[in-house]
Length: 402
Image (cartoon, rainbow, N blue to C red; front, side, top):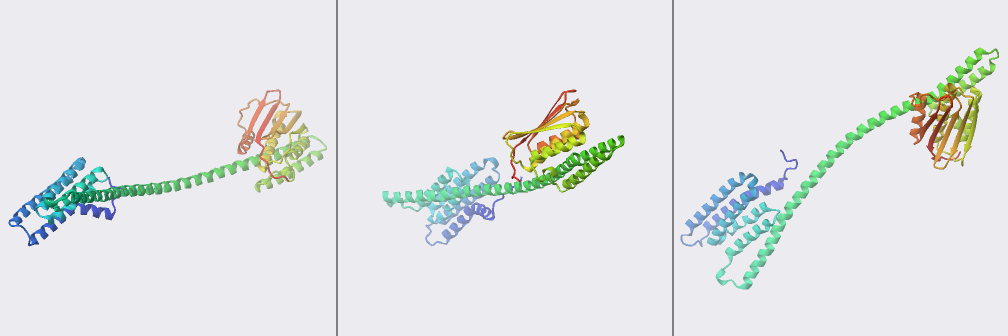
């Protein structure tokens, strides 16, 4: 699997340097040693032999590292120990090979981040300073000085290597977090576009439902009243009153159609609050149907928000239209109750009742949908032959006084 966050150019260069630094420092030490005029008698052959041993170890350990697999930590330890051992032999033979000893500091990075990094740096420092110290003339003060240098060097180099590895890990985590965030942003952008499309579609459906309810609550009811009056006019000789009522209903229906298209509230609510609009509705309904309708308002009247008032008015319209069309009632009552946190609308009649309360008629569904839209609810109680009671409950959200 490809690494989604490969090492940077600097990291790759440092890893390559760690691999070649033993060979480079060994070669540099050998060249300087052979070019030095102060070589001991017969020291060249020993230098070449020890160098050959170091070269063989570097090559062999390099092959071991490439094939180590899961045992890489053991292979790194063996590699480091061999390089440090050959460096110690060469440095005690010729101090110039302390250059080769320096490679131990680079190889210690293979142990990071762990306590073995400090151990590798400390071991390298001991070989480095131990090979240059004149042990025959060493004093306690000199040994303490060298030990202090070794301690400081171990902390500085080992701590720096561990800090470098941890910073690299942190950078990798940061890059991964940025990558995950970018992917999440792209996914959220797609979801946002999808939600916008769904919201647009839902808005279209809601608007269609609203227009259907407006048409049902205004034009359909008005046309029903007109048909009723015209049929009544056909049955009597003096049809002027019925024709006059039909013309009035037609004019009201036309006005409501225009207001529905403009998304305005019912004309009864244009210059009045809900109680006055209900009284007007009751008066017109009684005049049209001939059924006595008693209106009562209880509680402290407060101006409600337009959405609440329109909803209750339309529910009353629909409920009264159902009474006129289906109930065969002789009396009806409408009560509007202001009870503080909620407003109740109750419409009762003494008609034939509803035989199927769970009916799926458009009128009942329209009332329920309107009430749900403002956080309200609808309850219907009916007994065949004993009338029907429709109760609507909405939150008393107040509006601006007119």
